Image 1 (spheres, rainbow, N blue to C red):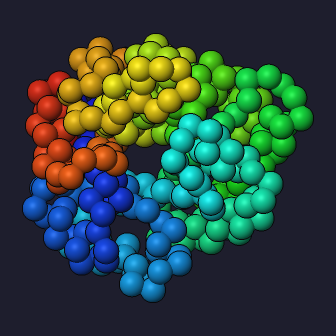
Image 2: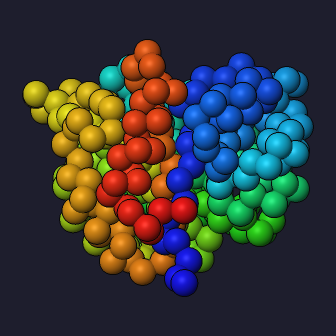
Length: 278
């Protein structure tokens, strides 16, 4: 019997837990045993120290970690373009230090992949893009030296721009965390076509849905999986065409009933993925 192509998980921050025991309880209620864990609290907040061991002691696995860069402001498209990822000079020293600490934790806990938003990568090959490429290489070097891979989240630039930047960076430890909803939220193209463009680099997939903005320059709207603009059967088909196992990690960052929305996403994944879902 062939192994399942897809393993389902959930992002820890989607459930908004205040401490590891609460996260463990929420995961048990939902019935998910794989989690992408936000790692910044694990290096900065005393109550989250030891979270990885606590999760694993309950039979839960860490699919990957997540690094939130310093000073990110998601209020508007303009604010995240200005503050996100490694792009802003004002927060780069703190982000670099945080990445060093997160990389050390990931290595110590044998977490093989950490994802983050690189920041808006300019399409044109100019001074700012050269600076970002240099910084992203530096972050990747930090992680690779400790045996950890990194993956940039999609959406803040087009798939073509990201693919071009990945070829320019040319680093063996760098991949892509593919989020189809982000492509729609940022107005950066069709997720199905983007899978094909970014196929060589895709290491993990976020399961999230969205509706496009009504006006250029505004945010789209995140919605429950299956009710937005992502063409899920075609999207899952494009992932199957990659021909390798992938973690499908449910992310819900809006709405008042997140646990329920995660369960809905699980049920719909079972329908779309069939026997390919673990």
